[in-house]
Image (cartoon, rainbow, N blue to C red; front, side, top):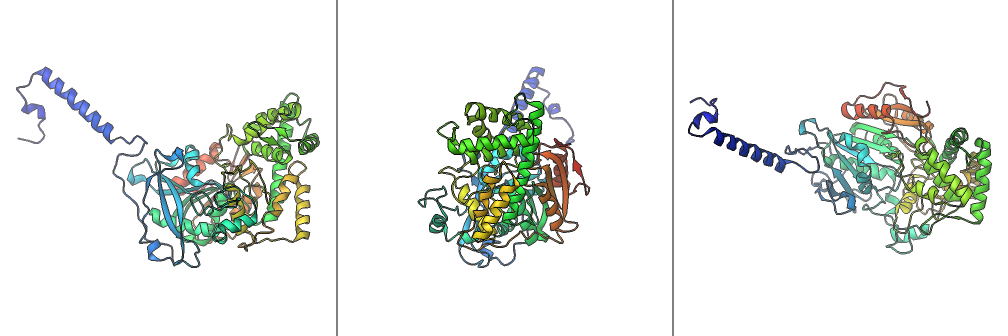
Length: 544
């Protein structure tokens, strides 16, 4: 009998009704089997093949490379990661100059790819900015921005050194206090780790991570401060560069204090554009008839808040520095938040009500920009996302259970070698104040960030030349108030000829992906195929 004969041909004794019943049962059984194979998190039912790499980082002991395996298991924290995510711990040297010495635990999180094995490219490692932002918390929070790549990549993030689950910096009154009390407190509670939390050490962690994830080359998406981390990685490991996206790029050619001036100018320019919009489109515009009047009104408002801060809800108060930080946070979110900013300023000016301004700054807003999770926790210097004072609160102030403030200061000061004396501090403070009538006073305290830091910083400016690396996509928005567009141009040039590929977006706000469709399409093409946009490509946007 031929194997091609239908099964039914051997069951001549069954009635038509019985055959129908059997068919229904088989259909139900098949459906149940398919349901049992279905992954409720959207992952492929196909058995997963783990990738392996054959190029471990040089100079590390075998126990950390070929002898180490990432043991992924269900995440216990944060609560948003308990379903659909895996977490692991990676062992890394505390000091890469002594690779066989003390080790640290690096906290990792992963969302597995949903596509078939044959189409999976590898892992896409994400850094959401800062410094001081937790990737373990950030991946569930910002997953929607990067979810389109899950068909081709595992999405992976991590807590950089000094942050969250990776040797967290403690600068509070006690070793359990995650707030920022003083530099002396940092030394007392975290002095053994402070020399090793800088960007270079974290970039070396990235290469060990790449190998343990099974990738011969690193595929990476860094935002704001994350562009500094990605660029330093490219400098250290040009032959290991895969597809690197550097979005809202920092300026690698500026030192810590020069960055304060550039950032103050950029946020002032963004505010001036808002003031023009407000005068033209908002009835009874709170900032008046244009930028000059807006500066005068903001100065009067700041003076009023200095004397008596405004109530901002939940027991919070809004002072002059809070005003500057909150307005800048609205500006970071682009033109979508200009109308809400005008409304919030009106409530503050007319009714002494700071709730909308403070609350709006705490809310990502309708733009929901993945590029701005770190704007709440501002620290300045090469590769940082904004200003920070030497003590006390900055931006949306870090609360007593928020260690990001301490981490920002520690990472920034580990990177920057500037330790200016009194004369230069006064001169630089005056330069920042002069750069912006609205934001200069608040931004100027950033020059004091590391003046009394007891450990040496690594260098004055970032070292990012990466000759021989694969093309790196660098994205800059012409209206970015936090990482000025000039930084993206300088980053693309500093990476080297044929390496840095600049994509310009004529957009307001800190970051352009994914809300600008042209940028999103270019990033999608690059991460899927490795093809970069043509040199000189400009994406139209809110400033076109």
